[in-house]
Image (cartoon, rainbow, N blue to C red):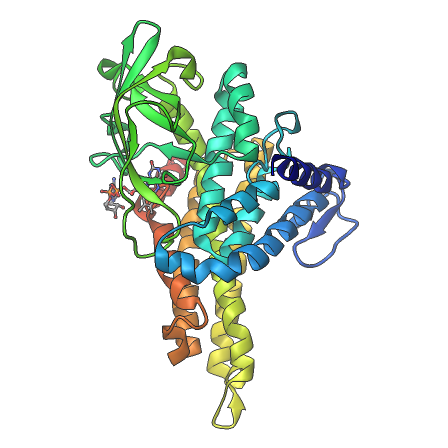
Length: 423
Ligand SMILES: Cc1cc2nc3c(=O)[nH]c(=O)nc-3n(C[C@H](O)[C@H](O)[C@H](O)COP(=O)(O)OP(=O)(O)OC[C@H]3O[C@@H](n4cnc5c(N)ncnc54)[C@H](O)[C@@H]3O)c2cc1C
């Protein structure tokens, strides 16, 4: 099994590293001569060949391995272990992790494309992959000590799912009011508190836990700890019974004097809030990608039906009211996709992205909710059943306006930054 995993991961890396890095392709339309590194700006949807290859690998995996179990996982509220294993085997869990640590060394855009492709089939699988790649892997790759990187990055790329523990019962939008404490005890820290709504926690092997090591300093005491699942005193509570993304686990994570060595601090003591702000700004782009994939998935399930189904002797798509609705949805989805791709390229090029990431998540989540809702109407009665899977996407879409910053919080961010431009 291990050998098979290693071989698959190497194969995935070959797909990525072997591809010529500079030639770009337009999403779905080939523009073979466009070069991202060339002085001329490329279309926002231009992709590196390696990115295109990752997207195709994710799309194939989603169709072949996720598609058959989407409904049963949703009904059971449980992620199949086989799906998680397959994602690792196909190199989809270490997308940006450096090759020396067993990852693919691909771009942030590649990670967003994988998230998008998976969301077309199942947004629950998509968010698990999104959090693991864009938040956990990137926190460890960017700020962890070389020792922690050597310990965790190869595992994160090959078999260990990660979970990000920030929210608590009293601190959601106001995340840095968190109460979880980190008390120094000799060479160790003792972590105590209760984290709430933690994605991936039922299956995770490692938790990035935000706790305050110096409450007298307010949010400047917040520190990020790398905590293995087997740490004594760490307990994952029962799963929330949710409206959507039901297969993605969301549980409380309870910490009762969990002893970790000082070497388990990720980066600097007291810098946790900075890391959380930076990583969540980028994570929002991933959620935008999830929402874009969801909306595309709804359209992909609906359009063939509009051609097949006839009423009044005419295929539904030939009624102008229906065709215009489809045109509107398609145009709005394209706009959302461009916002997401632009924000992703900003991340890669070190261009400011706070406002753009907030806009991408805000708009993409609205587009996802509207598209899934309209697609149900366009499908008529069958849309309201589970037959075409759009009912599930409609339920799944709602979370886009809540996690990694609610829509109001995105609006606050955008308003603050726009207003500052005119001061
Ligand atoms: C399925 C799911 C998965 C999650 N996964 C994770 C995870 O992996 N890790 C993690 O740490 N957290 C996770 N969360 C928590 C999530 O990030 C929070 O739920 C979210 O940030 C909102 O916080 P809250 O639920 O406390 O809502 P509140 O902060 O109580 O907000 C309630 C309402 O008040 C509004 N509001 C709050 N403050 C303001 C303001 N200043 N201005 C205007 N309106 C405001 C909000 O927009 C919202 O409409 C998850 C949540 C869910 C539901």
